[in-house]
Image 1: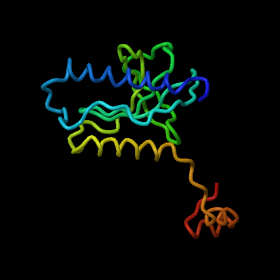
Image 2: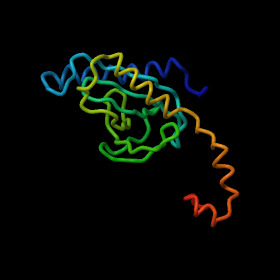
Image 3: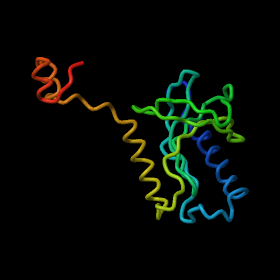
Length: 166
């Protein structure tokens, strides 16, 4: 997205990570669901268009969860904290929950993993987040030629072969 700079994206995602580092140190100490080998990290954030403007989309790793995150570039009318909405993320649609991120304002998240006990390293958590983002952002696969050929089948033959006609 040319209208918003990559340096603005870096500042926004670092502010997000910094906020969650503060949450970890101020509110999460001593809570048993924290995975001690993990740290807060914003992964793979990119600018994406949205009906309300531009937003940053990526994954957030913390010692207690990993989520997809939608972060508005500019503070917009804050969604009701806890409110749920369906949004496209890459080529899929997910339910996101609105939250207040203190200095970053409102954002929306969709849980991928919680708690994070199955991750034995930061590298594994990062690779998992990157793989999820790569899959979601991959272009739609082309329709296989066998499906294209099946479109021309008579409805009776398609029925006998277990294929539905639209």
